[in-house]
Amino acid sequence: MKIFLDSAELEHIERAKEYGILDGVTTNPSLIKKAVLKQQEQGQAVDMKDYLRRVLQAAGEAPVSLEVIGTNRNEMEKEGMFLYAQFNPIAENVFVKIPINPVLEPDAESHYEGVETIKALADRGIPVNCTLIFTPEQALLAAKAGAAMVSPFAGRLDDYLREENGLAFDKKDYFPSYGLEKNGEPLEDKGLVSGIDLVGQCVDILGRFGFACEVLAASIRNPRQVREAALVGAHIATLPFDVISELLIHPKTMEGMQGFTRDIVPEYAQLFRTS
Ligand code: G3P
Image 1: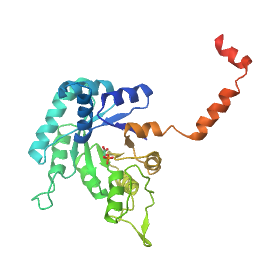
Image 2: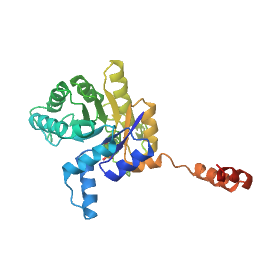
Image 3: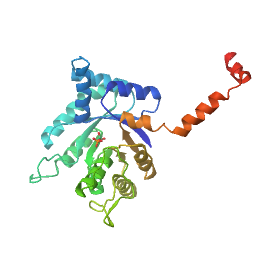
């Protein structure tokens, strides 16, 4: 499974790159806002074109998803073409992120403008990461339209299952991939019992029909979700910077290190001094 960084913060991207584990980067308007506010707090004005140029260069050959902001096909298609024309030449690593359904209100005339935009961009050879996926059916339509990646939002589906059932939780709380029960009844949304179940069903369906579309597990909040995303066959998981760091921490690893360090005899230590 590839590991992407879910952050627009330059410092995070540079550090993850240095660690040697960075396969890609995902951004969205909320992550851009976070990065901009951080720069401004440090007294630095942000020139967005220059900032994104630095992000793309820092990622190097790793793909970087940049999201459109429009809410209809015309706007999204124009913005997608702009993002690709403007930024892909910098490091040849831009994916355009298009929401599966950009409508803001339920009574919209059409819910197909995301799918239409994916098709229009894919036909021009622009790689699309289709975002805000909450059902395998949305993933199927995105893949049929030509998306190169689909991003099911695992954590937010877990949030929804708990919110709809009046369960209190913190954002990073673990939600089991096999689901939870309330009053003896399984919590579910459209037959999905967890965010990881959503990811797994997307993987199964796209794999079964041979789509060349990768499933990118998004909205990942904790290390167990990373493991479970891998176990259900996600091609990619995009992780916030703190979750990447948490993957490496175990008290017994630290305890083991303390023991090994204590036990170093001078004869063994000398070996390294002469090397
Ligand atoms: O990858 C999508 C992500 O940025 C959303 O994460 O934690 O806000 O649901 P979250």
